Length: 330
Image (cartoon, rainbow, N blue to C red):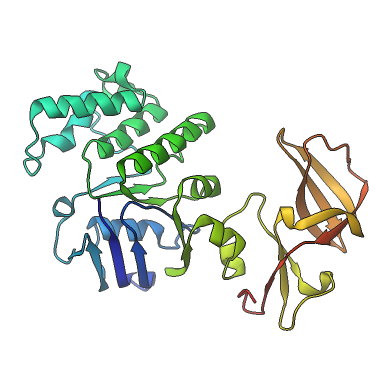
């Protein structure tokens, strides 16, 4: 396993800056998640680390070695794409064996069989080993795709939204499994997702990208509690943070233009009146949609709340975040 360092990495495609002067250290053995909307530079970062693309400027190091001029095969990294990228004419077993049969690895057949068997059992596809890839469901195909990366035991795993095409239960199961694999093996893993739950539950570090620039890098808890900007604040949290004019509540500091309130930062039972416009019972919690001074808010309350549309509740902020005119946190 290895530390990955990006130093001033820039990549352009025509007139588009896919990445602009990005510097980031991915610690050895960490699970780093990249967040950001489409076009933010997440997949480009993976492709540059993997060697599928080359940076226009800057440097990428893996385990202290510069990757300049090295091919993907020479970097000893494994990449899992959003689409399955399997060999359709091969069986599941042959797809899993394929990376291990590279002349660069020189792996003994007995070791190949052992690794394939262990990974197949872990991913619950042992009973499919002799099936052709085309005979699998979408979830099974993606598990094979993930397994093909895991068998290699590379220095770095790169994953581009590998769970996005799976159903909710399988996505939840594999999320737990991937985190367990990473933690137990000490693997370094760079992972792209749009799913905030994946970021909060799996990541040791989160990088927030915006228009090719790294806006913030830190632990999920730091990003959630101490976002550097309104943009970073909206990347984590479900329901998402409420952003309102700073003067909607009293007590805003100088230069504050926007107040940010996580759902749990809205205290109920005292303060000022707000109107319940919608109630969502989700089992473990109830979400309240409120209208307050012509602004819409979402907060959470206890699971068995009896509040209904049209009720009035009193609310007040608790430890809110404040942002200036440029959207930067004060």
